[in-house]
Image (cartoon, rainbow, N blue to C red; front, side):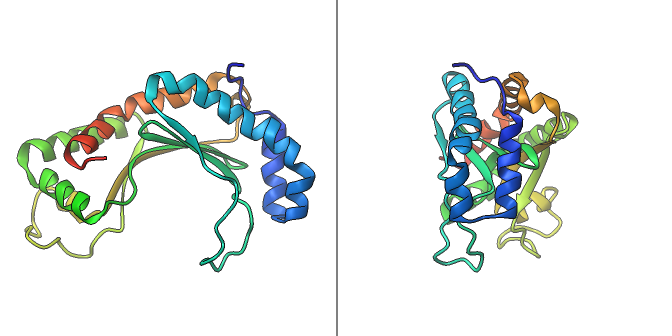
Length: 206
């Protein structure tokens, strides 16, 4: 079946889970999760996978072994769609694309590309274009100073200081989340952020 949106029961499920993150609640409402939360996500991914690439839904269970937060279940359903990411929760819908964290070699490649005139200027233009479309581009774990080997007054010093770079957009709860319009919204985000994903794939790698 083609994606038709998330019903109100999906929002109610996550509102309840936020209030009672217990095995008892999960077991009592598991059928609602599967029918009203998981199945719509599966349908959305099935619709978009032919156009944007391989998909994956994350497990709903939290790994609490090394966490102070011992909540058993994630209060959102999250999935990968090609180079992008989508999340649905009681707060609404969100989508992202990029590299939230870069490994050492990836980070070196990223900074070399940002530091280069052609590649760095192209990235600045991509970011400016996304922001004109009301899509935020954010960096993670910024250094307090310039990375080694780069001048503090480099024209792209802010980008050079980041250890990750990604596009992000959120949509609050509105009636259209319960309709097929979600598919077009997520497709639009993935298309708009495609050039950023391509830049990162070319200069940073997989």
